[in-house]
Length: 552
Image (tube, rainbow, N blue to C red; front, side, top):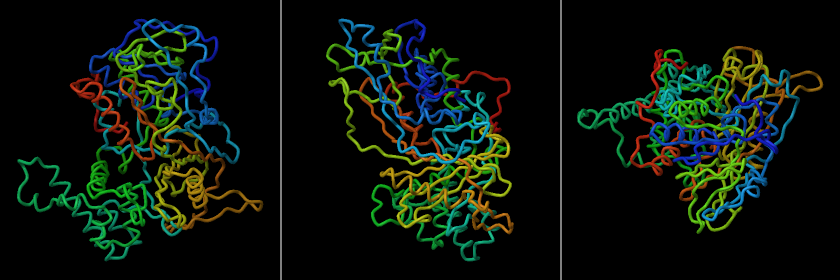
């Protein structure tokens, strides 16, 4: 967990250490999850690695920080990393220094309510809502690298809920759940079971090797033509009711955008993509004996993940220096290639490959600093809420999905909410936190959608002390909406840039998991070292208590 905001990073007059040696294979600036995974992979491949961060803690844009530090972290800061460092050390005859500037990643910050005490007992993620599938690549990488010994997980015990027509419904994600669902009619259960069985047979058939497949497996496989279809077209064949289509599309296949829209263009997911996520979801259930459902969450927050990979890198020889900003790029005389970095201390470090935090503006190689972006950046509207009553009975942690158009007709993307409790050590006992997010191109529209979701699930204490009500499918009469104590709504840009010997890792995106981020990270590693294996199993240090069957 982080102890101070980014703004508290090394300031004027800091007694910076001298780094020795002064030349490395790889220098990384920023300890976000992608940079930390890359550092571990490079160190495991036998490369010399220097990993610096301007903050006094690990995580960068993937940090978990004390709630009182949130305002400082969300405040935009576009000042140079260190305006004095470049001036203090003149460029050499063979190198040209190009100042680096930070960009404002967050905007449209809006808070309401008073932060409850003790405020520092609340630890907030900058990437929320975010979970790990029990069977996803992030978990496999933690196990392969040995990082799993530095982080503990708990399950999202309340499973998933779908917000539909003003009510919350449990997501039927298995045959047993479908059978026990009292809100579904007999024919609806039959149609959903039929669809799940087709998908399960396809997954089983494709899991077998080509040599092991029989005629039955070939018949069970969905055709390539159907796999390339928009998933909604494939799904329509099974005549699911609208609510169950929403369950499959947005609560299990995790589609972000309206799959029924008049012009979804590239935002439609294919049958192949939908089934891949269903397979991951199905494979995750029951992987760990002590994990309920498909999802797990790291104790103390997602900031523990980059720290775990940094520890793996350090074991393999990577050098770590916190409170050390990178002030400038070092370039060759023609300003065509990055050859190193100038630190805030004024020390020049040479390297074959420089990788920087995506919150830095990336200069072009022929202009000192270019503020323009060739592509309009994507945005994610996010929110953090604090309340004192669970959204689902006695469940501690639960995921809620709002399909497109479930909140208002103008809603074009799903909203996801993740409720967390004190059993994850992120808030005091008796309190709960929720993270919400939705992708957007317009900041105002994204924030409006988030606020609609908050209004649907929470109430503000009115002058009469009365609270609103939320319709539920439970027989319990305990249907009073939780009272919202404090909230923060903001917008995050999602940008990334790469350029030759200067690379930038991906920012936190709009997704619920890390699959896309890790895929981009693996591609960066392959671009740098095409002949090296990415975090091989043998790279993990030996531990006497290794247990891959536990989520903790």
